[in-house]
Image (cartoon, rainbow, N blue to C red; front, side, top):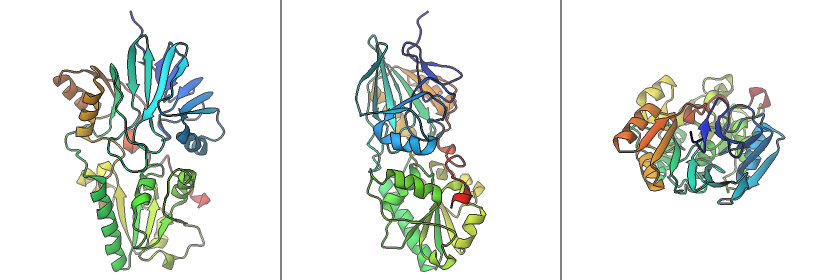
Amino acid sequence: MKIPLLAFNDKGIYCQQADVYLDPWRPVKNAIITHGHSDHARWGHQNYITHHTNVPVIKHRLGEINVTGKEWGETFVINNVKFSLHPAGHIIGSSQIRVEHKGEVWVFTGDYKTEDDGIAVPYEVVKCHTFITECTFGLPAFNWTPQVEVITEINNWWAENKAEGKTSVLFGYSLGKAQRLLKYLDTDIGKIYTHGAIENMTNVLRPMVDFPPTTLITRETKKEDFAGNIVLAPPSAHGSVWIRKMTPFVTGSASGWMAFRGARRRRAIDKGFVLSDHCDWFSLLDSIKATGAEKIICTHGYTDIFSKYLRELGYDARTEKTQYEGESEETEKDVETEKEL
């Protein structure tokens, strides 16, 4: 029986021919990492390979590790298996991993989005025979509004809150979403304050992106400093003691899940902005078609529904269980301890 080029086991996605894992969730010898989110880049591997712009990100998160950075499209060969990294458009430094052996090509997307956010290198179509795709938002109900419209909505919300003398507290994951929001906040409205987790992560990325100035919130920050301004914070800061000094405040959350009104109610958020770093239903389908792949493996998200639909379209589609969590994973795990603020 032919050994598949990539196989799923209890440690991750394994290439036996090269003895390499892609985004493994248990410690392994050799790991190729798509991006810096905590469900894809984990501590404990002996050797890491990733895109060079992701190197400072995973070093910030994982500490001293043995990591090698690669360029986009740079081919590196391990035991006659060819690997290369290609832009995934998910967050800064996020990659798809192309794997080729004896004329067979597989692509593992990690997490990806096809809308150009002006920060991450835009998603690149990579032709292949087998395509391993996330489907975090793999339901027809998910159909994203263009980024420019959502950002305008956010800035208008901030201006309205300022007119009422209230602080705007906007929640977004500390790596990726927070920087996407920060890049387009209108500093003519007011000042941007940041939670420590977001400030520290943004400082790692400032050499790569021109972000507006921010002010770190510390114990010395006075309550009156916040009025009319905006605070960027990770989702887990909601309801914490830390947020009370910003009263009176209005909360907003930027997430693909805000497309569901119930999600906003459950999280006790005043305003939801539908802004995701993942593909919507239509982008997933368009991406898959563009690869030319006949075999599709769905890893995380609405896997059963999405793979069933793909089979109805004529694809050889199946699901595989992983420990990737899509947009739900970055709530608690991305937040640094409150004592560091």
